[in-house]
Every structure is written in structure tokens, then in C-alpha cells.
Amino acid sequence: MASNVIINTDIQKGKINKNIYGHFAEHLGRCIYEGIWVGEDSPIPNTKGIRNDVLAALKNIKIPLLRWPGGCFADEYHWKDGIGPKEKRKRMVNTHWGGVVENNHFGTHEFMLLCELLECEPYICGNVGSGTVQEMSEWVEYMTFEGESPMANWRRENGRDEPWKLKYFGVGNENWGCGGNMRPEYYADLYRRYQTYVRNYGNNKVYKIAGGANVDDYYWTEVLMKNAHWLMDGLSLHYYTVPGDTWSDKGSAVDFAEDEWFITMKKALRMDDLVTKHSTIMDKYDPQKRVGMIIDEWGTWFNVEPGTNPGFLYQQNTIRDALVAGLHFNIFHHHCDRVQMTNIAQTVNVLQAMILTEGEKMILTPTYHVFDMYKVHQEAEFLEVNSSLDTYEYNGEKLPQVSVSASKNAEGKIHISLCNIDHQNEAGLDLDLRGVNVVDTKVSGTIITAETMNAHNTFEKPNVVKPTKFTGVTVENNKLAIKLPAMSVVTLVIE
Ligand code: AHR
Image 1 (spheres, rainbow, N blue to C red):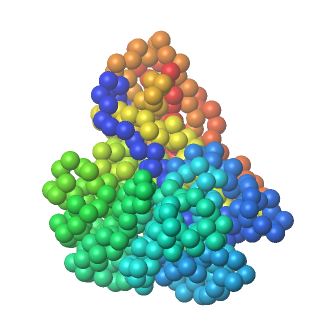
Image 2 (cartoon, rainbow, N blue to C red):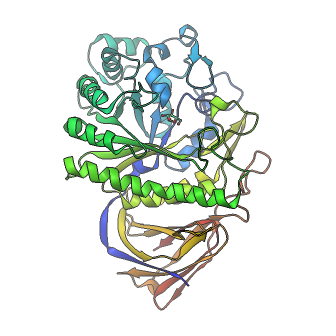
Image 3 (tube, rainbow, N blue to C red):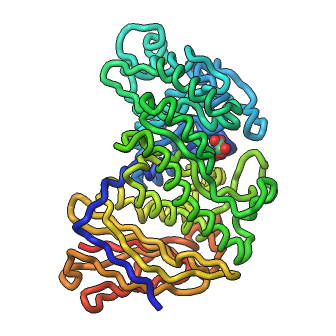
């Protein structure tokens, strides 16, 4: 048996927004502090307090955009606590995440510096849950107003003359939960009110993102779209891949059995259904698809590593996470007409992280490598894919064995990304690249795979799971014959 895939290289279905490859960094555990910010006086090499190794790693994957300061932290964050001389900044408790001291050393100026160094767009999430309209309005004024005003003057006093460019602004986070436990009707009204005072100063045009639904809360999307769609540019959606049945036992990141592999793949694939159904509701009010779907939190969520602070959400990252990342990107590509941004949770040391750190040491996770392999799709044209796929069967349940997406970039290069989610069996694939004479092209590829389901990188062995050259593709009858090993993610280049 083999899966059959047809890619129509002449049928372009829309641009893959590079912001689909966005990230999220919260004041949570060791993400910001230690993971990104070490302070100017740290022995760890840094640029004005920001770790150089992490900067270089994130630049390499062409991080397009970074969401901050939360998450749940955002609706407890008061931005004025995080500006001015560091020694005078408020020391407080991070009540939501581990009850640890937050010294506010990483604030607006430090975040904007981070984005400048990464050459990525900032995406700031404002506080609706416990903040005022005035506070939110003044934050935007502080950051983006060029002229003479109390907030702009204050910014100058704090060492920054020029306003920053700030495009993406979220009006609250998870306002159905940690962001205020609101009903959608109430939040929709608050959204209308708060966003009114998120001003466009000078030529800074803010892309306003309304707090969206939790998983399959379609009623939330309905109410928000009905009552406020014309006042928003984006509407968010949060969905995490959690293999366990309860939040108290989400399953281990490393120590898991075959059934947990299968269930993880099944739950990751659920993203497609969620995006489809939320999009259908959005289409009702916005058939032109002007409002972007912003999936600003996604990724795996397992039990924390044994012995670590339960409030820090520190988890390891295996080849299973690599597959979850690949599946998500393929799904997002297929919905690139509506999905304009996504942010994996979270960048360093938290949940499905790209990077793990321990003191001065840093390792790259299998998820990082998938971001690296997929970066070629950023801003490329998504190509139509039709497929008839073999199944991956476990305990009588079936899933499509392979996931595929393809794009053509500005230079005409075609990139095809493939995931074989089967934990035991190789996947055979006949791939017909319509519109291209494959015998006249050069085909090459990169693969990430492993021998065991829980293969991962550690500080002692940092390169156990990493991309290598892919040799499982040949040209037969002007088609590509592909053999994907079990548990693998592959990106092919056709040039
Ligand atoms: O990413 C961790 C948390 O998950 C975020 O703070 C919150 O928005 C979500 O519930």
C-alpha cells in the first residue's frame, strides 16, 4: 500500500503568513527570567541583559513575531510596574505562576529591545481582567506616540526618544477563564469599550486582537463575531494537545506508552476540526475573511518534569513533539486563508519549548528543529493538495498515516512537508507534482526522526534528535516515490 498525493503546483491557494510561525513568551517559570533575560551583570554572555545564545537560536528559525507578557500573567500585569530604573521597580508576587517574586526587571523597554534584536514584530497582550481602560490606553500611548504627551514624555525620560512600532495588540487573554471568568456577552461589551481607546498614533496602525474561544466554545466565537467583528482585526483561539484525560494527570512528556503516542496524534489533529468549525462561524459575519484567526496559544501540555515547580510548566520535548509541531503547521497552511497568526506556547523552558536552558547551557528541542525545517514556508504560496492516505491504526481506531502540505516561494522553489505519525510503520507515498517535470528538477530533503518514541535531547546529549539529510525519495514515472520512516517529519525542496 502507498498513500497517493497530488500537488497542483499551478493552483495557489493563498499566502502562508509568516506569523503562523509566531511565538509566545510569558512571565512564567523560567521562560523570561533565566530563559531569555539574565541581566547585564550575568556571566552568561548577553546583549543588554538578553542571552546571546537564545537570541542566535531564535534568529536562525526566523522568528517573525513574539507575544508577551502572557497568558494569564497579562491580565494581572500592570505595565507601569515594569518601567524606569530597575532598582526602583516593584517587587511583587507572580500569583498565577508558582508564587515566586517578580522583580519587574523585564518590562516594556526590555521586551521591545528583545524584538529589535530578533528583528521580529512585538505582539503585546493588554490587561482587561484587572486593568483599567485608562491603563491600557496609556500603554499604547507610551509605546507609540511621537509628539508631546504625558506618556510619550515619560518614555523619553526612561531613555527612549523614538516611539516604537507596535502593530499587534491583544485586548485581554482567556477572558472566559484566568482573564476574568467572563461570559462572552460581557467580554464582547468590554472588548468594544477597551479597544476604542487603543489609539492609532501617527502612522502606527494597531491590529486589534479580541480574546477568543477556549477549544470548542463555538458560542464564544458566535457572540464575539456578532457583537464586535467590525471592531477587530483578529480573533484568538486557544487549544493545547493534552494526552491525559484530566488536568491533574496530563501524561508524562518522556515516560509514555504507545497508546499515549496515538492519543497525542489524534488530539493534535483535532486542531483541524476546531479551525474549520470556528472559521465557519467567522465566515457568517465576515465572508471576506478580513478578520484573522489568531491561534495565539497552542502546543503540547504534559505533566511537569518530576521534581520541578508545578507552577513553572517545565517539560521535556521528544520526537512526539516534533510530530505535533509538523501536524499543526500542515493544518495551519491548509487554513491560511483565515489563520493569520499562531503562537506556540512557549519559547523557552515552558510547555512545548523551542529551547531549554540550565544555567549557561542551552539545548534545542525536536520542536525547534521542525520550526527550522518549516521556515521555508513563511510567506510562500500554499499549493493545492489532494490525497488518498493510508491509515494508521491502533486498538481499532484509525487516523490518516501521513500529513502533507506544500508551498511555492518567490524564487519558484517548491517545498513539501510530510509527517508520518505512525509510531511503528514506514509510510510509502506516490507523489504526483502536477505542473512540474520532476525529472528535470533537483530534489533534496531534510528529515527528523528517531528510533524510540521518547527520544529527546538533554544537556548531556544535546544532539540525539536533530535533522539529517533525507535519502528516501526517488523519481519514478515522473512522480516522486517517497519512503517515510515511522515517526518522521520531512521537508523536501524541489528546484
Ligand atoms: O501557556 C500557559 C497558559 O495557558 C497561559 O498563561 C494561559 O493563557 C493558558 O491557559
